[in-house]
Image 1 (tube, one colour):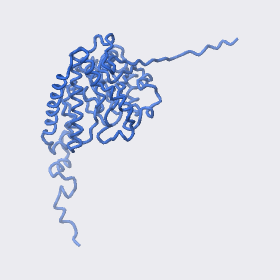
Image 2 (cartoon, helix red, strand yellow; image 1 turned 180 degrees about the horizontal axis):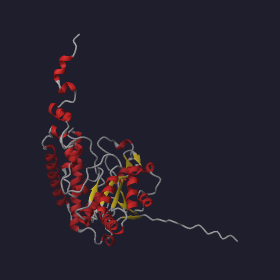
Image 3 (cartoon, helix red, strand yellow; image 1 turned 60 degrees about the vertical axis):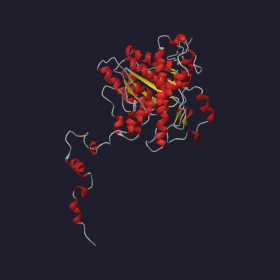
Image 4 (cartoon, helix red, strand yellow; image 1 turned 90 degrees about the vertical axis):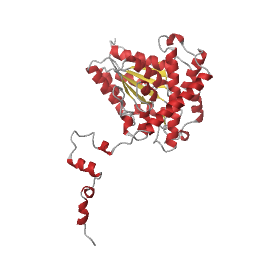
Length: 377
């Protein structure tokens, strides 16, 4: 008789999907215990409303030639809102490493709102993060910044800091090798890092089904030893709870967490895009009903915490607030030419000192007398 052993299963996995607040504003009270207070829900709803108006004004600034291209956050506010609050409440030493569709998370953690406008206006001072604000400048190259988050997490672990680094990125970034290198590095070294993937179904014009054969994006973290979970990305309760739990997990268990937030980009990729050319109108309509602002307002109304009068007051407040942000961004003093030269070398090399003084890079500009050396016909 054969004594060969039977094959055994060496690995099994399950990805949990978390939803606490549904599309009709109904709350799973059991899951919601110990998460957001009523005051915090109101705060997040107000922030989402302000940022929706911020998006609308940024769009108008671009269309009127007062700003360059801009990526709207419309439809994706809940994920960064809940996660951003959890990050803020956890520790002042936490770090946020964003791409460009997490405005609320940045504002909740101390970034002045005019910084984002300045960035898209082409003013480098938009990337000058105030002291004490642990946020990296927004990253435009797709998928490069999770490496920075892994590096920060490595430093936090080395210094024994009770803090984490959180990288936000889109589903399209998972098609870039840098993301997988970051995930592998963080997993192999057991770093306090959370990877927050916003799956909005479109990498510019490339649909999700062309991005990956995986049933979820969350499962991509399994290969690197991460704890993986999928959430309803339009649910502030789910985003808050899962991020809060993820931060605690990476601190206590020494393993990264990969979160997939299933959401949808209701606007174009950027103001340089026209999603009507590649996106089905019925698909868009189906997601409009899942708008995070609508479901959060329904929840507040059901609890008697919101009404039309409060909405009107909030709309007026949002307009006034964003008008002030735009005024500060457009009213900033012009940068000086010295800025081009003064922040690279401790002592400016002679050739750069001449360029700074003459504002010319050519030999003729630096020594105009050479004009006389030209031969005449």
